[in-house]
Each structure stands twice: as C-alpha cells, then as structure tokens.
Length: 167
Image 1 (cartoon, rainbow, N blue to C red):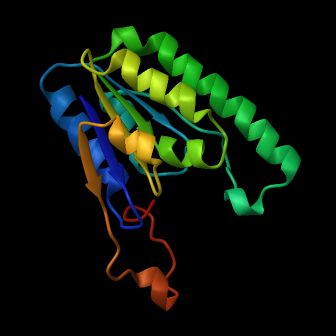
Image 2 (image 1 turned 180 degrees about the vertical axis):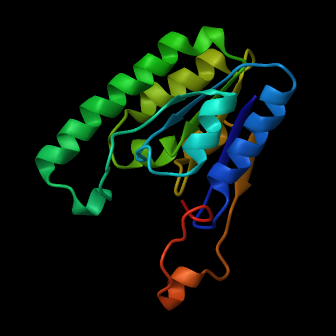
C-alpha cells in the first residue's frame, strides 16, 4: 500500500523510519531514497545498517537559497535518482521516498513520474512518501494519509536544530 506522511509538523521521516524498522525486523528488504537531504542527517548512519539508502546531494541548500542553475542541476540529479530507485524497486519489499512530495512540489521531479511510480508498485510493495505539501493527486493515490501538524516548535522561538533530534 501507499503511505503518505505530510505536513509542517515534526515526525514525517521518523514515522517512515519506524515502518522501515518494523519491515526490516521481519526479514524484509527496504530501500530509502532521501530527496533534498544529504548524508548529514543522523538517521542515515543507522538507516545504512538496516536498509539500502540512496542519499541526496551532499551539502544540499534549501531551495529558496538556490540559484536557477543549481535548481536545474538538482532537478537532473533527483530525476535520475528517482529512476535509479525505480530500477532497483523489484528487489525490495518497502520503498521510502523521503521528501518526494516536496521534490515534486518544487519541480525537481515530475509529479506524473512520481504518481506513475506509486501506481506501478502500489499493491506489490509498501511505498512510503513524506513531504510538507502534497498535491491532491498524491493524496488521492495514497492508501494511508497522515498529516503531521505543528502546534508548537522550538524553532518558532529561535532555537537551533539539534543533532540527533532534528537532524
């Protein structure tokens, strides 16, 4: 089935990784691709031990800090990586596309390709997608849809992200 965790609240990737732990713990194979994230997120260290991980670009900037040239390069990179994940998909029971909803929203991957990916493998594999603001089409093509809504966050008061908690 297709799982979608989205919203402005904390916990989307954490929820996806919880499913991955459960899946891997039962002897199944998991592939995770992290869009818009490099290897600096601490979860990558542990994730590499229980699943196969395709990381995003190292030292990825926030989209709003990118030049047009950097955005074009990112689109080529992430489109190629989505196709790489698709080429490997048959070997796995679960595929996590972390921040794929955001990559589609900013045009780094084609939403049509993402929808085709989940339609192709939905019913055969567990597909887990995270992001902030998915399209109606992505929501409609998902079986589980969970919105993570921020009520309060330390960032709102100027607190810095903490290694091991936020990244």
